[in-house]
Length: 206
Image (cartoon, rainbow, N blue to C red; front, side, top):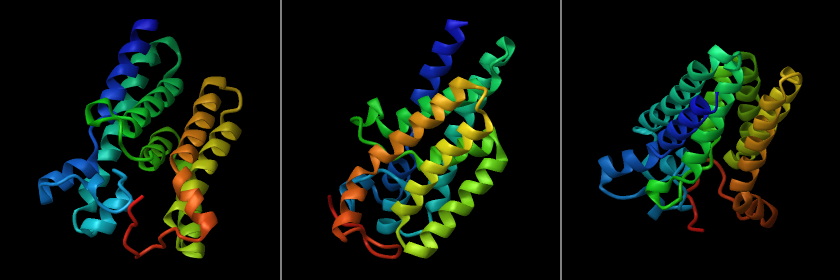
């Protein structure tokens, strides 16, 4: 069983190296999105600097690679009775690849789109709750980072509650939650200082 795990983990990590924001910014403007705004290779920074016209392509790339990673690992581990654990493995590794891509200098995004897509693939009920949490948080605060952080916390809580009898799923969800919080540490610092950009504002160089 270790061979399918290793194959799935490696393939998922490499899929994570395919970054939508970087790819589209290169194709659209022949430049790297990481040279603008917050320096992050995520959807929010892309929209702030290039507009929303091409955002759907960024979402398609990042959501597509996550769904593929989850389904691939599920396919590999389903014969051993660990289909759901396989999906979480795919989510975990593709997020690592997205956040720390070896082929892109280990400077990627923050993994929120990966987590949201993984939730949709694994349990649509949790996905709908996370979608509502994100929307309400952003509408109330106008901070995308607050919505992202609340979504990350909801991911950890949601899967821990719904799959309490699957320790690997619980462990994976908690790790992804903590990883997302860690990736937003600069945002948290700016929120505390009151310098975080609100929705509709241009990103600030970190």
